[in-house]
Amino acid sequence: MSLAKKLRVEGRIANYDREFEGAIEIDTATGLIEYVGPIEGRSDLPTDGCIIFPGFGDLHIHAREDVSGSQCYKEDFVTNSNAAIHGGVVHVADMPNNPVAPIDDEKYAAKELLTQKSAVHVTLYAGIGPQTQPLKRHVPYKAFMGPSVGDLFFRSQEQLETAIANYRGRNVSFHCEDPEILEANKNAPTHEQRRPASAEITATEFALYLIEKYELIGKLCHYSTGDGLKKISAAKARGLRVTCEATPHHLFFDDSMLTEQNRLWLQMNPPLRGPKDRIALIAALKNGLVDYIATDHAPHTIEEKLKGISGVPLLDTYGSFATWLMTEHNFTARDIARVCAYNPGLFVREFLPAGLGKGFGLIEPGYAGSLTILDLNTPYAVTRESVRTKCAWSPFEGYTFPGSVRYTVLNGNVHQAS
Image 1 (spheres, rainbow, N blue to C red):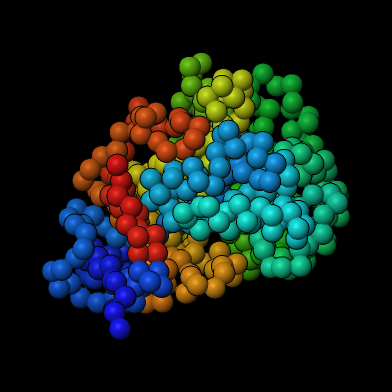
Image 2: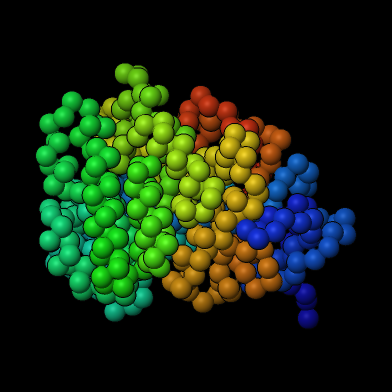
Protein backbone atom coordinates (compact mmCIF):
# COMPACT_ATOMS: atom_id res chain seq x y z
CA MET A 1 0.00 0.00 0.00
CA SER A 2 1.52 3.35 -1.02
CA LEU A 3 1.55 6.23 1.41
CA ALA A 4 -0.33 9.39 0.48
CA LYS A 5 1.99 12.22 -0.51
CA LYS A 6 2.52 14.91 2.11
CA LEU A 7 3.38 18.57 1.65
CA ARG A 8 5.56 19.84 4.49
CA VAL A 9 5.96 23.57 5.10
CA GLU A 10 8.12 24.99 7.89
CA GLY A 11 8.59 28.55 9.08
CA ARG A 12 6.96 31.38 10.98
CA ILE A 13 3.25 30.55 11.41
CA ALA A 14 0.51 33.02 12.35
CA ASN A 15 -2.91 32.03 13.63
CA TYR A 16 -5.27 34.64 15.04
CA ASP A 17 -4.39 33.64 18.61
CA ARG A 18 -0.65 32.93 18.40
CA GLU A 19 2.46 33.25 16.28
CA PHE A 20 5.10 30.53 16.41
CA GLU A 21 7.88 28.70 14.57
CA GLY A 22 6.54 25.39 13.36
CA ALA A 23 5.93 22.79 10.69
CA ILE A 24 2.74 21.91 8.83
CA GLU A 25 2.03 18.67 7.00
CA ILE A 26 -0.83 18.50 4.52
CA ASP A 27 -2.15 15.24 3.17
CA THR A 28 -2.51 16.02 -0.52
CA ALA A 29 -4.93 13.12 -0.97
CA THR A 30 -7.48 14.60 1.42
CA GLY A 31 -6.38 18.22 1.11
CA LEU A 32 -6.42 18.58 4.91
CA ILE A 33 -3.81 19.57 7.47
CA GLU A 34 -2.66 16.38 9.15
CA TYR A 35 0.05 17.61 11.50
CA VAL A 36 1.36 20.79 13.12
CA GLY A 37 4.55 20.46 15.13
CA PRO A 38 8.15 21.58 15.60
CA ILE A 39 10.56 22.55 12.85
CA GLU A 40 12.91 19.77 11.71
CA GLY A 41 14.69 21.49 8.83
CA ARG A 42 12.97 19.63 5.99
CA SER A 43 10.48 22.03 4.48
CA ASP A 44 9.30 21.41 0.92
CA LEU A 45 9.10 25.17 0.35
CA PRO A 46 11.61 27.93 1.14
CA THR A 47 9.92 30.35 3.54
CA ASP A 48 12.79 32.66 4.51
CA GLY A 49 11.47 36.16 5.18
CA CYS A 50 7.91 34.87 5.08
CA ILE A 51 4.95 34.41 7.40
CA ILE A 52 2.68 31.41 6.86
CA PHE A 53 -1.00 32.20 7.35
CA PRO A 54 -4.17 30.13 7.14
CA GLY A 55 -5.51 30.69 3.64
CA PHE A 56 -7.11 34.10 3.24
CA GLY A 57 -10.84 34.41 2.48
CA ASP A 58 -12.62 37.24 0.68
CA LEU A 59 -16.30 37.38 1.67
CA HIS A 60 -17.39 39.92 -0.94
CA ILE A 61 -16.57 39.46 -4.62
CA HIS A 62 -18.39 39.72 -7.94
CA ALA A 63 -17.19 36.93 -10.24
CA ARG A 64 -19.79 38.04 -12.83
CA GLU A 65 -20.62 34.59 -14.17
CA ASP A 66 -24.20 33.28 -14.22
CA VAL A 67 -26.17 31.01 -16.53
CA SER A 68 -26.75 33.86 -18.99
CA GLY A 69 -23.00 34.26 -19.56
CA SER A 70 -23.71 37.88 -20.45
CA GLN A 71 -21.05 39.38 -18.16
CA CYS A 72 -18.26 36.83 -18.63
CA TYR A 73 -16.41 39.35 -20.76
CA LYS A 74 -15.54 41.05 -17.45
CA GLU A 75 -14.72 37.97 -15.35
CA ASP A 76 -15.75 34.35 -14.86
CA PHE A 77 -15.10 31.75 -12.20
CA VAL A 78 -11.84 30.67 -13.86
CA THR A 79 -10.29 34.12 -14.20
CA ASN A 80 -11.69 35.10 -10.81
CA SER A 81 -9.84 32.18 -9.21
CA ASN A 82 -6.66 33.14 -11.08
CA ALA A 83 -6.85 36.61 -9.54
CA ALA A 84 -7.64 35.16 -6.12
CA ILE A 85 -4.65 32.80 -6.17
CA HIS A 86 -2.40 35.65 -7.29
CA GLY A 87 -3.66 37.62 -4.28
CA GLY A 88 -3.23 34.78 -1.78
CA VAL A 89 -6.98 34.14 -1.47
CA VAL A 90 -8.11 30.50 -1.13
CA HIS A 91 -11.88 30.94 -0.83
CA VAL A 92 -14.35 33.62 -1.87
CA ALA A 93 -18.03 34.44 -1.37
CA ASP A 94 -19.78 35.65 -4.53
CA MET A 95 -22.57 38.21 -4.53
CA PRO A 96 -25.94 37.52 -6.20
CA ASN A 97 -26.59 40.67 -8.24
CA ASN A 98 -26.28 38.85 -11.56
CA PRO A 99 -28.56 39.31 -14.59
CA VAL A 100 -29.96 35.87 -13.67
CA ALA A 101 -29.90 36.26 -9.91
CA PRO A 102 -29.79 33.21 -7.58
CA ILE A 103 -33.04 34.01 -5.77
CA ASP A 104 -34.58 30.52 -5.56
CA ASP A 105 -33.35 26.95 -5.21
CA GLU A 106 -33.28 26.26 -8.94
CA LYS A 107 -31.36 29.40 -9.93
CA TYR A 108 -29.00 29.00 -6.97
CA ALA A 109 -28.19 25.40 -7.96
CA ALA A 110 -27.62 26.42 -11.58
CA LYS A 111 -25.10 29.08 -10.55
CA GLU A 112 -23.49 26.69 -8.09
CA LEU A 113 -22.74 24.28 -10.95
CA LEU A 114 -20.74 27.02 -12.66
CA THR A 115 -18.48 27.41 -9.61
CA GLN A 116 -17.08 23.91 -10.12
CA LYS A 117 -14.59 25.33 -12.62
CA SER A 118 -13.10 27.58 -9.93
CA ALA A 119 -9.77 26.56 -8.42
CA VAL A 120 -10.66 28.32 -5.15
CA HIS A 121 -13.73 27.42 -3.13
CA VAL A 122 -16.78 29.60 -3.84
CA THR A 123 -19.61 30.26 -1.37
CA LEU A 124 -22.66 31.80 -3.04
CA TYR A 125 -24.99 34.38 -1.54
CA ALA A 126 -28.66 34.16 -2.52
CA GLY A 127 -30.38 37.42 -3.37
CA ILE A 128 -33.19 39.11 -1.46
CA GLY A 129 -35.60 41.23 -3.47
CA PRO A 130 -39.12 42.60 -3.02
CA GLN A 131 -40.75 39.33 -4.13
CA THR A 132 -38.27 36.67 -2.92
CA GLN A 133 -38.60 33.92 -0.31
CA PRO A 134 -35.93 31.94 1.60
CA LEU A 135 -34.39 28.93 -0.12
CA LYS A 136 -35.04 25.45 1.20
CA ARG A 137 -31.33 24.93 1.80
CA HIS A 138 -29.12 26.81 4.27
CA VAL A 139 -27.28 29.65 2.50
CA PRO A 140 -26.16 33.22 3.22
CA TYR A 141 -28.24 36.07 1.76
CA LYS A 142 -27.55 39.57 0.47
CA ALA A 143 -29.91 42.55 0.57
CA PHE A 144 -29.13 45.61 -1.56
CA MET A 145 -30.86 48.48 0.18
CA GLY A 146 -30.22 50.83 -2.76
CA PRO A 147 -30.16 50.46 -6.58
CA SER A 148 -28.37 47.41 -8.01
CA VAL A 149 -28.48 45.09 -11.02
CA GLY A 150 -31.97 43.99 -12.11
CA ASP A 151 -34.69 44.22 -9.45
CA LEU A 152 -32.66 43.06 -6.43
CA PHE A 153 -33.04 46.32 -4.52
CA PHE A 154 -35.57 48.29 -2.53
CA ARG A 155 -37.11 51.71 -2.95
CA SER A 156 -38.05 52.31 0.70
CA GLN A 157 -37.46 51.05 4.22
CA GLU A 158 -41.02 49.76 4.37
CA GLN A 159 -40.54 47.64 1.25
CA LEU A 160 -37.31 46.23 2.65
CA GLU A 161 -38.84 45.31 6.01
CA THR A 162 -41.74 43.53 4.32
CA ALA A 163 -39.22 41.30 2.53
CA ILE A 164 -36.86 40.80 5.48
CA ALA A 165 -39.74 39.63 7.68
CA ASN A 166 -39.69 36.40 5.64
CA TYR A 167 -36.03 35.77 6.53
CA ARG A 168 -36.21 35.64 10.32
CA GLY A 169 -33.12 34.00 11.81
CA ARG A 170 -31.24 33.86 8.49
CA ASN A 171 -27.71 35.06 7.71
CA VAL A 172 -28.20 38.35 5.83
CA SER A 173 -25.56 40.80 4.56
CA PHE A 174 -26.62 44.40 3.87
CA HIS A 175 -25.41 46.97 1.37
CA CYS A 176 -26.15 50.01 3.52
CA GLU A 177 -27.23 52.94 1.35
CA ASP A 178 -30.68 54.41 1.94
CA PRO A 179 -32.56 54.55 -1.40
CA GLU A 180 -34.60 57.65 -0.50
CA ILE A 181 -31.48 59.67 0.38
CA LEU A 182 -29.82 58.51 -2.84
CA GLU A 183 -32.87 59.63 -4.79
CA ALA A 184 -32.87 63.04 -3.08
CA ASN A 185 -29.21 63.60 -3.97
CA LYS A 186 -29.17 62.11 -7.48
CA ASN A 187 -28.52 65.47 -9.15
CA ALA A 188 -25.56 66.50 -6.97
CA PRO A 189 -22.43 67.45 -8.95
CA THR A 190 -20.11 64.60 -7.91
CA HIS A 191 -20.49 60.87 -7.35
CA GLU A 192 -19.39 61.30 -3.72
CA GLN A 193 -22.10 63.93 -3.12
CA ARG A 194 -24.75 61.84 -4.85
CA ARG A 195 -24.10 59.03 -2.36
CA PRO A 196 -23.47 60.95 0.89
CA ALA A 197 -22.39 59.52 4.22
CA SER A 198 -25.89 60.14 5.56
CA ALA A 199 -27.21 57.47 3.17
CA GLU A 200 -24.94 54.85 4.75
CA ILE A 201 -25.57 55.97 8.33
CA THR A 202 -29.38 56.03 7.93
CA ALA A 203 -29.30 52.61 6.26
CA THR A 204 -27.05 51.30 9.03
CA GLU A 205 -29.57 52.33 11.67
CA PHE A 206 -32.32 50.54 9.79
CA ALA A 207 -30.25 47.43 9.10
CA LEU A 208 -29.41 47.15 12.81
CA TYR A 209 -33.11 47.54 13.63
CA LEU A 210 -33.95 44.71 11.21
CA ILE A 211 -31.16 42.48 12.57
CA GLU A 212 -32.51 42.91 16.09
CA LYS A 213 -36.22 42.64 15.31
CA TYR A 214 -35.96 39.61 13.03
CA GLU A 215 -33.13 37.87 14.93
CA LEU A 216 -30.84 37.91 11.92
CA ILE A 217 -27.17 37.01 11.76
CA GLY A 218 -26.21 40.28 10.12
CA LYS A 219 -23.20 41.57 8.21
CA LEU A 220 -22.70 45.13 7.01
CA CYS A 221 -20.82 45.23 3.73
CA HIS A 222 -17.94 47.48 2.55
CA TYR A 223 -18.31 49.94 5.43
CA SER A 224 -17.04 53.49 4.84
CA THR A 225 -18.17 56.03 7.48
CA GLY A 226 -16.53 56.71 10.81
CA ASP A 227 -19.74 57.98 12.40
CA GLY A 228 -21.55 54.80 11.41
CA LEU A 229 -18.93 52.71 13.19
CA LYS A 230 -20.16 54.14 16.50
CA LYS A 231 -23.61 52.68 15.84
CA ILE A 232 -22.13 49.28 15.02
CA SER A 233 -20.08 49.37 18.23
CA ALA A 234 -23.18 50.14 20.30
CA ALA A 235 -25.13 47.33 18.58
CA LYS A 236 -22.39 44.81 19.28
CA ALA A 237 -22.23 45.97 22.90
CA ARG A 238 -25.91 45.21 23.39
CA GLY A 239 -25.51 41.74 21.93
CA LEU A 240 -26.63 41.99 18.33
CA ARG A 241 -25.18 39.31 16.06
CA VAL A 242 -23.62 41.69 13.57
CA THR A 243 -20.26 41.81 11.82
CA CYS A 244 -18.73 44.32 9.46
CA GLU A 245 -16.50 44.45 6.36
CA ALA A 246 -13.97 47.06 5.25
CA THR A 247 -12.46 47.19 1.78
CA PRO A 248 -8.85 47.88 0.76
CA HIS A 249 -10.00 50.92 -1.23
CA HIS A 250 -11.78 52.55 1.72
CA LEU A 251 -8.75 51.80 3.92
CA PHE A 252 -6.14 53.07 1.46
CA PHE A 253 -7.79 55.93 -0.46
CA ASP A 254 -9.94 58.87 0.62
CA ASP A 255 -11.64 61.73 -1.18
CA SER A 256 -8.69 64.09 -0.63
CA MET A 257 -6.76 61.91 -3.10
CA LEU A 258 -9.25 62.30 -5.94
CA THR A 259 -8.13 64.16 -9.08
CA GLU A 260 -9.63 64.69 -12.49
CA GLN A 261 -7.27 61.97 -13.75
CA ASN A 262 -8.18 59.26 -11.22
CA ARG A 263 -11.78 60.13 -10.30
CA LEU A 264 -13.42 57.63 -12.65
CA TRP A 265 -10.97 54.87 -11.73
CA LEU A 266 -11.72 55.38 -8.03
CA GLN A 267 -15.50 55.49 -8.36
CA MET A 268 -17.33 52.85 -6.34
CA ASN A 269 -20.44 52.36 -4.18
CA PRO A 270 -20.26 53.46 -1.44
CA PRO A 271 -17.84 56.16 -2.56
CA LEU A 272 -14.60 57.22 -0.96
CA ARG A 273 -15.05 59.25 2.24
CA GLY A 274 -12.86 61.77 4.05
CA PRO A 275 -9.43 61.18 5.63
CA LYS A 276 -10.96 60.96 9.12
CA ASP A 277 -13.29 58.19 7.99
CA ARG A 278 -10.39 56.26 6.49
CA ILE A 279 -8.31 56.52 9.67
CA ALA A 280 -11.33 55.49 11.77
CA LEU A 281 -11.81 52.40 9.59
CA ILE A 282 -8.17 51.38 9.99
CA ALA A 283 -8.43 51.75 13.77
CA ALA A 284 -11.69 49.77 13.84
CA LEU A 285 -10.16 46.97 11.78
CA LYS A 286 -7.19 46.82 14.12
CA ASN A 287 -9.20 46.84 17.36
CA GLY A 288 -11.72 44.22 16.18
CA LEU A 289 -14.81 46.37 15.61
CA VAL A 290 -14.49 45.72 11.87
CA ASP A 291 -14.28 41.97 11.35
CA TYR A 292 -13.14 41.35 7.78
CA ILE A 293 -11.12 42.72 4.88
CA ALA A 294 -13.43 42.11 1.93
CA THR A 295 -12.58 43.55 -1.47
CA ASP A 296 -15.97 44.05 -3.16
CA HIS A 297 -13.95 42.90 -6.22
CA ALA A 298 -15.83 44.46 -9.14
CA PRO A 299 -14.06 43.63 -12.42
CA HIS A 300 -15.45 46.19 -14.84
CA THR A 301 -13.62 46.71 -18.11
CA ILE A 302 -11.46 49.74 -18.81
CA GLU A 303 -14.05 50.96 -21.30
CA GLU A 304 -16.81 50.70 -18.70
CA LYS A 305 -14.78 52.59 -16.10
CA LEU A 306 -14.22 55.45 -18.55
CA LYS A 307 -18.01 55.67 -18.92
CA GLY A 308 -18.51 56.09 -15.15
CA ILE A 309 -19.34 52.57 -13.96
CA SER A 310 -18.76 52.09 -10.22
CA GLY A 311 -16.49 49.39 -8.78
CA VAL A 312 -12.83 48.35 -8.66
CA PRO A 313 -11.02 44.97 -9.01
CA LEU A 314 -8.96 44.07 -5.93
CA LEU A 315 -8.50 40.29 -5.64
CA ASP A 316 -5.01 40.39 -7.18
CA THR A 317 -3.70 42.68 -4.44
CA TYR A 318 -5.41 41.18 -1.35
CA GLY A 319 -2.27 39.60 0.16
CA SER A 320 0.10 42.41 -0.70
CA PHE A 321 -2.37 44.90 0.80
CA ALA A 322 -2.09 42.97 4.07
CA THR A 323 1.67 43.65 4.08
CA TRP A 324 0.87 47.37 3.74
CA LEU A 325 -1.27 47.22 6.87
CA MET A 326 1.58 45.50 8.70
CA THR A 327 4.23 47.96 7.52
CA GLU A 328 2.32 51.25 7.51
CA HIS A 329 -0.16 50.69 10.34
CA ASN A 330 1.61 48.22 12.62
CA PHE A 331 -0.87 45.38 12.22
CA THR A 332 0.58 42.24 13.74
CA ALA A 333 0.61 38.92 11.92
CA ARG A 334 -2.10 37.79 14.37
CA ASP A 335 -4.23 40.81 13.40
CA ILE A 336 -3.93 39.86 9.74
CA ALA A 337 -4.72 36.21 10.47
CA ARG A 338 -7.86 37.32 12.32
CA VAL A 339 -9.36 39.65 9.68
CA CYS A 340 -8.14 37.85 6.55
CA ALA A 341 -8.39 34.18 7.58
CA TYR A 342 -10.02 33.28 10.91
CA ASN A 343 -13.09 35.53 10.78
CA PRO A 344 -13.85 34.79 7.10
CA GLY A 345 -13.45 31.09 7.93
CA LEU A 346 -16.00 31.40 10.73
CA PHE A 347 -18.46 33.11 8.39
CA VAL A 348 -18.45 30.40 5.71
CA ARG A 349 -18.02 27.36 7.98
CA GLU A 350 -21.72 26.49 8.26
CA PHE A 351 -22.17 26.67 4.47
CA LEU A 352 -19.25 24.45 3.43
CA PRO A 353 -19.74 21.08 1.74
CA ALA A 354 -18.31 17.85 3.07
CA GLY A 355 -14.65 17.25 2.27
CA LEU A 356 -13.22 20.48 3.64
CA GLY A 357 -12.73 19.11 7.15
CA LYS A 358 -13.17 21.75 9.82
CA GLY A 359 -13.09 24.46 7.18
CA PHE A 360 -10.85 27.48 6.69
CA GLY A 361 -9.14 29.95 8.99
CA LEU A 362 -6.78 28.01 11.26
CA ILE A 363 -3.52 26.14 10.89
CA GLU A 364 -4.49 23.11 12.93
CA PRO A 365 -5.02 19.41 12.14
CA GLY A 366 -8.32 18.77 10.41
CA TYR A 367 -8.56 22.18 8.72
CA ALA A 368 -8.31 22.77 4.98
CA GLY A 369 -4.72 22.47 3.79
CA SER A 370 -4.82 25.91 2.22
CA LEU A 371 -2.21 28.52 3.14
CA THR A 372 -1.26 32.07 2.27
CA ILE A 373 2.51 32.60 2.50
CA LEU A 374 3.47 36.28 2.50
CA ASP A 375 7.00 37.41 1.67
CA LEU A 376 7.66 40.52 3.76
CA ASN A 377 10.98 41.26 2.04
CA THR A 378 9.93 41.22 -1.62
CA PRO A 379 7.85 44.23 -2.71
CA TYR A 380 5.11 43.96 -5.30
CA ALA A 381 4.99 46.74 -7.90
CA VAL A 382 1.45 46.67 -9.28
CA THR A 383 1.22 46.97 -13.05
CA ARG A 384 -1.54 46.34 -15.53
CA GLU A 385 0.48 43.42 -16.87
CA SER A 386 0.92 41.80 -13.45
CA VAL A 387 -2.73 41.24 -12.56
CA ARG A 388 -4.70 38.09 -13.41
CA THR A 389 -8.26 39.44 -13.40
CA LYS A 390 -9.84 39.35 -16.86
CA CYS A 391 -10.60 43.08 -16.78
CA ALA A 392 -6.81 43.62 -16.71
CA TRP A 393 -6.37 46.69 -14.53
CA SER A 394 -6.00 47.68 -10.86
CA PRO A 395 -6.65 50.86 -8.88
CA PHE A 396 -3.22 50.25 -7.33
CA GLU A 397 -1.35 50.51 -10.64
CA GLY A 398 1.90 52.40 -10.08
CA TYR A 399 1.99 51.64 -6.35
CA THR A 400 4.56 49.29 -4.82
CA PHE A 401 3.39 47.29 -1.82
CA PRO A 402 6.06 46.50 0.79
CA GLY A 403 5.52 42.73 0.54
CA SER A 404 4.03 40.12 -1.74
CA VAL A 405 2.47 36.68 -1.95
CA ARG A 406 5.19 34.06 -2.38
CA TYR A 407 2.91 31.00 -2.40
CA THR A 408 -0.79 30.23 -2.31
CA VAL A 409 -1.43 26.64 -1.24
CA LEU A 410 -4.81 25.15 -2.16
CA ASN A 411 -5.59 21.86 -0.40
CA GLY A 412 -1.91 20.92 -0.53
CA ASN A 413 -1.31 22.10 -4.11
CA VAL A 414 1.29 24.85 -4.36
CA HIS A 415 0.87 27.91 -6.57
CA GLN A 416 3.90 30.18 -6.73
CA ALA A 417 3.54 33.89 -7.37
CA SER A 418 4.86 34.96 -10.76
